[in-house]
Length: 114
Image 1 (tube, rainbow, N blue to C red):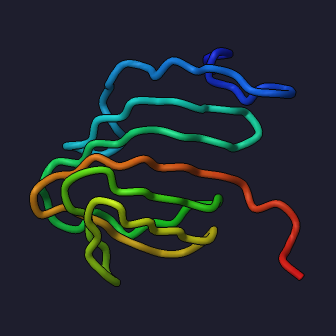
Image 2: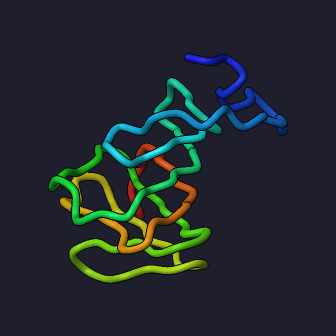
């Protein structure tokens, strides 16, 4: 874990983006922003054009903001300015027709809505 990418204990903190590196799947490039042991992760993600990936789920809330290009899943297609949120355990697959860049945020589910 990179201490410079953890959440601040209080107040605010300027965090320098990491270098682009290989993502988890072929055709992905990741630029890390937050990687905190409490389960919060924020990154920029570039996805190459390609079909739907493997069906998977996350144990955290997944939030995606499309910055440029296109992105799609089994439910819809998304473009620049679109925001997608998935709750923990939501099964999904995703792909891109022309490639895209997006901000992805993973956050643990804390408490429950009343």
